[in-house]
Image (cartoon, rainbow, N blue to C red):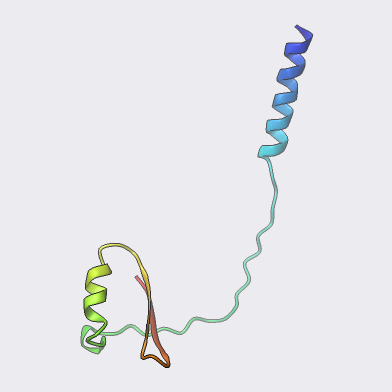
Length: 75
């Protein structure tokens, strides 16, 4: 009887200690984001089929012209 009670108490203490954690996660602002909303006519022609294919679900995409990053989309 004492062993059973001691085991239950030990398990309860282990669950209590392992389940409770206190952490402070402070959010740090790195910089302001710069963005531009484009009309349908301003989107490059090469990018339109890719956007149409992926728009069924949320996605991220980066568009470049082989040298410079032109845009990044989070949809």
